[in-house]
Amino acid sequence: MPSPQRRAGKTVLTVVGARPQFVKAAPVSRALRRRMREVLVHTGQHYDHEMSASFFEQLDIPAPDRDLGIGSGSHGAMTGRMMEALEAVMVETRPDLVMVYGDTNSTLAGALAAAKLHIPVAHVEAGLRSFDMRMPEEVNRRLTDHVSSLLLCPTTAAVKNLRREGITRGVVNAGDVMMDAVLENLARARRSAKPEVVLPPRGFFVATLHRQENVDDDRRLRDILETLAGLPLPVLMPLHPRTRKRAEALGLSPHGSLRFLRPAPYLEMLLLTSDARAVLTDSGGLQKEAFILGTPCVTMRGSTEWVETVRAGANRLVGASPAKIRAAVRALPSRMPTSAARRLYGGGRAAAKIASVIERWLARGRK
Ligand code: UD1
Image 1: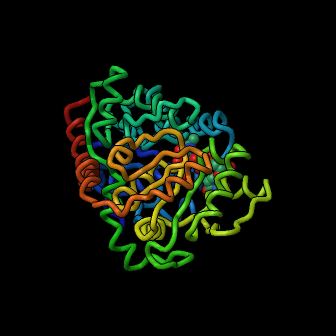
Image 2 (image 1 turned 60 degrees about the vertical axis):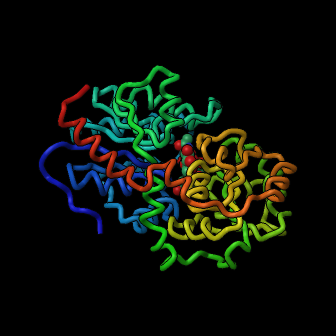
């Protein structure tokens, strides 16, 4: 059951919109609501049941107070429409603080709308960098960090990135809220998750793909899917709607080892990630979830924000090169101990820490 709201005191307005933000906000919302009032706003960036409502259900997230229903569009149109609608909600509800998560267009829209109304912004997952400004996510997170008053970093690497950009005030290494979510939900996933396809543990790979750089480039998309189809174990691929649309437009259908699935709900994805021989992905969050669960990862990108997963030998960056993907799969390490991830990502206490940092910060007054 969602936690009851504390009625008196300060109000925090939380902006979510895309799948990974539902996962991150779930533990933080719960911790915040024990201490203050939360107004939860869903921008509507992700709207399919499988991309949105199923996460609210499985993670016991309270129904949003507002659903802006903005949906998809070009980056500028989507961000602009979100800003306009969020501004109106902020003017009406007068929050003491606006919380944003990660690096999506919803993050940037929430941060900019708040900053222009002089409402302080707290950014969860501050300080992450890929150093690749062609990624929309990199633009979103850099700009968000530079208008935030509280920068809630998941790792020491993130704190260092901010220091290099001259941001030291309001910076806290809070640990990683996705670690909290994994620890809270893994036992439940083992008890009740029902993946669309069940295969013996370690007898399959799980793959996901949704980054603009991979999916909107016909050649890269074709190369990656062909390579996955030729891998030596079945490849279960829950398909993001963006990827499904592009694959269908190019006439690319699953064959060989490759099986397309519907987008997986959170608990099912946790179970698949935990049981797979390896994860192949271009998602940020999944690289880290694989590391937390001890499953080796092959990342189909040229850079990663989660540098500690690569340093620990748990993750290999291969871009979209078929030869590199195949080589990384041939040289997969065995399962990793999960203790390193617990140490690096705050051991599952990030949400409580974030809520108490925010409570103290608001009690002291702004600045
Ligand atoms: C967004 C985030 C990305 C995050 C990802 C998680 C930005 C710039 N990117 O990428 O950082 O990792 O979410 O999934 O904010 N669509 C549907 N149904 C849905 C949602 C999307 O059909 O429920 C379609 C949209 O119409 C669009 C495409 O998928 O054509 C992409 O959606 P969009 O929200 O633009 O970006 P994502 O690729 O999901």
